[in-house]
Image 1 (cartoon, one colour):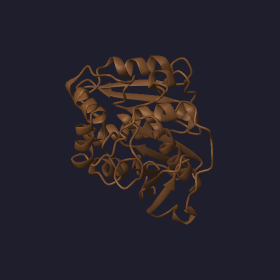
Image 2 (image 1 turned 30 degrees about the vertical axis):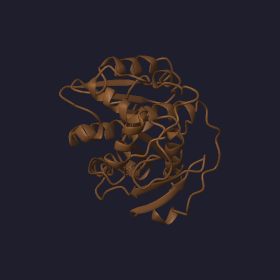
Image 3 (image 1 turned 135 degrees about the vertical axis):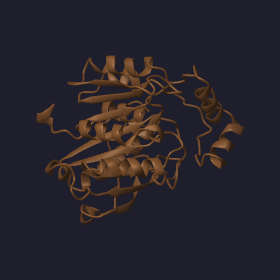
Length: 276
């Protein structure tokens, strides 16, 4: 799925929830129902700008709205604005089957549309691992966001240069692996391989026209540092202000992200346009 057609996403009327937590079922453009939650800006949020920006968080592969690391990240980002979390297709209480970064762009687009329906002037996206790849691809293919941040994201598909990634490929590509994914990891994976190779994150980065932050740890066990460096280098061709942070000792994605790192990402991604 390279260039999804923009089509209306059916949403419940959520405008009344702007100042209180809410839960919703979102319908993607291709008919998948997603579980999503909204967390309003925390009391004493960092500035008045918090009432103007919504952060949409995209979890990593095998994550979900209810996972502790996702809820922790949501609470941190709520200090800077409203927060929408959602479970990708095939994850948690969402329907459908995971396509591991392809049609998940439509899931993120539905969550962005919900955030916008709540009345926020600006919507930004932050993704972790697979969610980071989706954030990059969504910004390039769909647009409509003010800034994006990709944390621990891969730059290209089919990478198997590390032991964790070889294990992940076994889970995704093998029938027994998909059983393990469904039973052990609570992730339902589409057994059909991609018929067309989706636009790789590194190619999508070259098409992003909004500020992009790439964050990666030098202790990431999944993707080595050539992944974030190639994303940032590609983004420099179009993004007005790409930044690359290589974090000492940081492992992988939302499970390893410290509160201080999440705070720094939140500060960057929610900064007003005039401050960039």
